Image 1 (cartoon, rainbow, N blue to C red):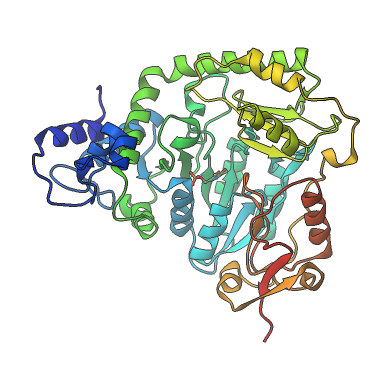
Image 2: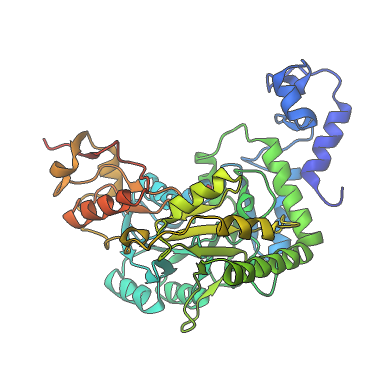
Length: 469
Ligand SMILES: Cc1ncc(COP(=O)(O)O)c(C=O)c1O
């Protein structure tokens, strides 16, 4: 197989090794059994750091070479692999970008991994509320970011989310340059945009901006195994081990070689086939979009024509508003017919294609959407945006580590949250630890649940709050 240093080293090792006196305990599947039967040949490559294999914590061999290939492909200064998803990449980027106690500007719809970084790095989040359109987030505007930068001149870092879960980007280049002009380190959470660079229909890739760190999940929109991600460094201001040393704090010392190998193959496939595979996927997405619009009662959500918003053509948001069904109900109906979608919300479902889609059964999908029994529109098939950020009374870290008590919703108003509460996906906290629980949020949570939504962080009706002494 072409230039895939990790995979080639693994293949060579499996040919060389006659006797295994080391971890992992399954010994590359020597003893026939359920695991070997299940994973087959793949088990040969589930290795540990022996022979010419490398260390993810201090790579100097095939991992280093594979990272350099990715850096070359994306045109970055350096790229760092992680087997713990963009989650580890975001935590490490935050640890690398601001000192304890510093302020960091964060979009309110940031993923919970950003909260984890804020807690671990002991930062103070200052929120910017994203713009909404038809019930979906568009992202933060340049004006709202500029206002936050002026309000918090001491902020050391800015986190940008691009694209949103629904694939929406705004004027990323401008957002980055505003943050850089204010001397902030800039982290772009591009977990859903690792493919953007490889097709002209795609929104701008963050690697083409002046950001400092760009975090991408190679497992989300590329072909790598779940958990595979990388972080790009776009400037020379940080030493080479600055991010790696932070990543090492949150990564296992026994990374999966299957995941590492899949990162290697993802770069190889992107290089070789990225453009053609994306071309095919974009074409199929366009056909599916047309078929839904022409042959089903559903509409498709799109970004407004004004402004500089763009949407990843591989994300299709089917709106259920006005159909009498919530997105949760439609998603369940489709599941009963063997069709599983990326995400459901009160107001619709998200269909996601990737460069791995070869032949989508468009007709089957359309038939299934059409077979849904008709209903009268209901008031509960849409939901307003969540309330804006309430006052932050304690730092998220202090609140998270504080003694807690559990109270019911009636007693939660006016208390300080000790845990985040969020729907997964998309995983953006409705409330951060350290924030005041306000009535507005309690009402929103009731409305959210009344539509069939599920929230993590709440046990039944119980809120985890900072204990009063
Ligand atoms: C916007 C965003 N950022 C970060 C993450 C975390 O990515 P990973 O699952 O690769 O850790 C997710 C996961 O869904 C996400 O949606």
